[in-house]
Length: 257
Image 1 (cartoon, rainbow, N blue to C red):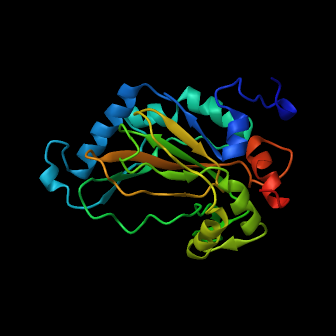
Image 2: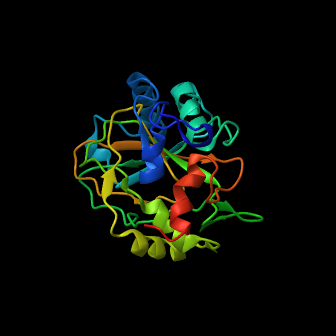
């Protein structure tokens, strides 16, 4: 089936119709599982903990990072399958390639959960000097990369399907502090169904920058490794007839739900 203005729907690497409707799409096996497993092994060494010593897991969340793109991290972020998916969603030349995977929050089981599970959209609008705000013209796309096997009890990121239209409507023409924007987008999208970002190491989720999402409590037994990477765009997302990022929020700013 031919897509709109040259963008293909349901025939390429990702399902564009699903992305525009739900505000996210899963990319299965963006890299082989063994690459995700190797990245997780490196992260264990970076944080100085071991999968074989659960008595040393004392914090519900430990932050790690890849700032160099070494080894498996580089294979992940430079995946040809990922690049093709970004071309489909952002348009060729519509996103800025990066060489590092970035931040990786690691969530540990059997501990009181961290108080960081509120519904929100990411702050993506760069401010002069430093800092970022949340607004209706976001400048990055969110990439979630699974680096461990994540089931529904393993603290998967929660995503409100279709909430990008709600957030687009309440944030149109605004740039707000994340603590101000969070309650607004939460209230606007509370009626949306919740989908959990589950899968295997090497799977990815490409999430519209205005899709409302949240962390979850860990109810499982194994630590959860998931990178959350901002993919910078060549220009701000504005609703309209352009690429799928723009088309996905056109209905929201026009008042449709």
